[in-house]
Image (cartoon, rainbow, N blue to C red; front, side, top):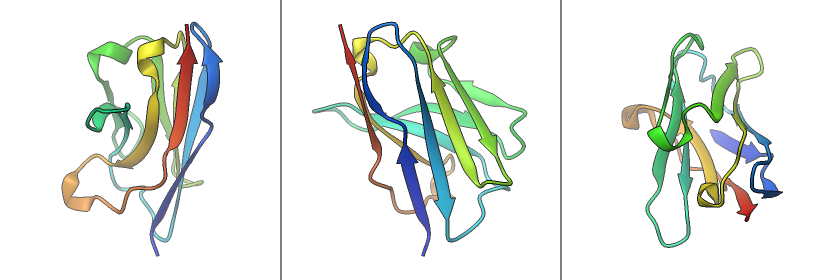
Length: 117
């Protein structure tokens, strides 16, 4: 059974940092581009960042550029999101999944990030 387990969220003050992890089990994702997504209360899930299979290319939504860094460890089958200079508008449940909808697997539970002002 394929599972994506996100962790590392929490409550942090504005300007703080968190590092999220996404551990995959049940299959390897080492050949696939992976992404982080988030869903704020009352809003649709949105794209945050993506990383290609080797980790050599990354892409970010404008609102997190220069603050967030996506990375991956294919040996551990894990994807990370380093979040710095957090803002209240970053408050959301964060999820990981494949970048491509074609290879998308069931969404995990996500990890809650709450940024206080």
